[in-house]
Image 1 (cartoon, rainbow, N blue to C red):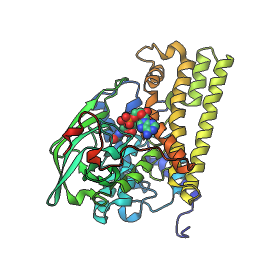
Image 2: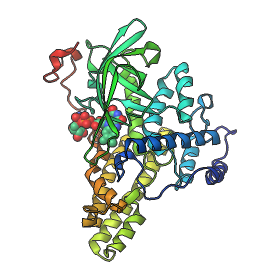
Image 3: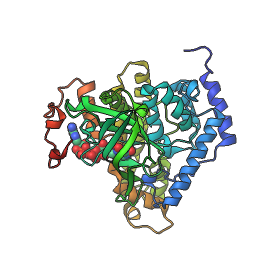
Length: 426
Ligand SMILES: Cc1cc2nc3c(=O)[nH]c(=O)nc-3n(C[C@H](O)[C@H](O)[C@H](O)COP(=O)(O)OP(=O)(O)OC[C@H]3O[C@@H](n4cnc5c(N)ncnc54)[C@H](O)[C@@H]3O)c2cc1C
């Protein structure tokens, strides 16, 4: 370790004092992530919270606590994952720009750090750290998201620019994001993984139409985009032409760290509090409902507590081992799998504990509403950031060395049957 680096304990003490002076306290128990919020925020309310996130991010930047592991030349602090982990412990209980951690810092900033040119890094990363550039991911397509290499959104070169055509979907915060990473097919005559390229583009680009998608719980934060001759300068290409899969491998890795393991996100990622699933909130609810002595309820509370403890220990252990090289980066799939299934299970546990209070609620019973709506949307935690089934595949094939899944699409991608629209490919 660099002897000039600030001692982690001294850094934590400095962070503690700064936080107390500069950051507002979090509204405990309030679910801030738009997708899971109990009361469906209006578009204006979402934009107001986004503006607050930008201000809070700017405050972190001005205080010297943004981009703790980002090199100083791009506006970061040039410190270590241990410093970021210490800061994450200190910031618990404070409000912070939770809603922009994913996708701005992971995977987008992480991908730029690894694959961006110097010009691209200097142009974007300081703006991200100052809260001026919110980034989103244009990855999933209507035809499928797990098979990212099967992307059919196409980029065609015209001199020093590319024209992008196609559609992307399930873009978190797409309608209020500033910039995006976008995966596109640049070569149809090679096997699917070898014909992809990654681009960056502003969400205000001419030809990019954005439509909000309403979910079962009323959230409208997801978007579908339609790209019609969207012009992207070659200077905004990330990585080499047709080498997008190398970028994607790391993009997907950073995306999986949504459940823990990233040195680039502040606090607990997109969800600063466990909301109704916080064990103290669950125990209080059980007491209020007269169930605290009920053996079945006690078993559920014990299970929720054990899951939370195991998750914290797993995140700490796997993060440390990935940082030292004791585990490969594919190990993030273990965090992704445990985080996804545990979050879904906690939503089910809360629903069981709350019973009918989590099914019918009065307008002012926000926690009850969070439980009910959280149950409806619980499976999202097993899908967003890559599905838990895909995480199981990574664990089986990359960590346990089990046989690879059989593939029926190793021909030139143009010749791979892809359903009724296959004949309309370029
Ligand atoms: C909260 C949330 C946030 C998201 N944010 C974004 C975003 O910002 N940008 C973005 O581009 N996308 C985003 N997504 C989309 C997400 O990445 C995709 O939904 C996900 O990758 C799955 O793709 P799909 O929905 O097309 O399902 P499919 O890929 O069609 O899969 C359907 C089912 O089949 C399973 N399956 C598929 N292939 C295999 C296989 N080889 N082995 C085993 N099982 C398999 C899947 O696990 C899944 O259960 C988000 C999704 C959620 C829920």
